[in-house]
Length: 171
Image (cartoon, rainbow, N blue to C red; front, side):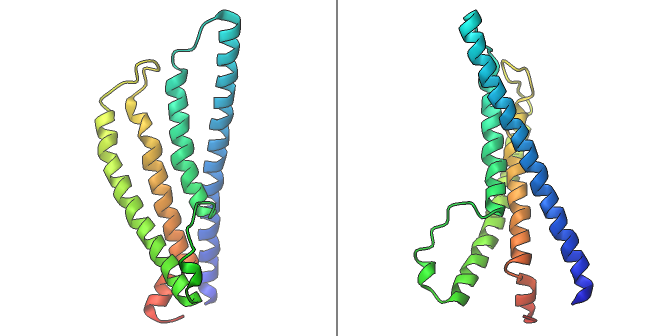
């Protein structure tokens, strides 16, 4: 179907743009954390003092790297996969299992993302003690990460597994 080629290309470009944007954000966050660590070491050595807010900032960086980095790893297929059972199955069964796993990942990421919204609302009422930032900022990486995982699962379902076409019987 030639008419769907431009839309597939646009979809792929959009997904690559999202991926690249979040990779750039994580790179900047990681470089900032490294700078903070170096500044913290220098301050301790030279002034025998410490930045009290550095621990809260490091927790935020860890959350960003974990949730957003995990979503990017899922899209790039750099996640852990235990395939010793499915490797022994016929190709068609393996493909079906892979599609089911991606659907399960979509469902779980939507559930966790939705549940994290309540946590966001609860934390939005608090303030981080040292940074004096809204504590909800510590939940945002989870919400964004789960959203990205859901988007990337949808991408895999439509592009890798071609689910709608397989369901309708056109493939």
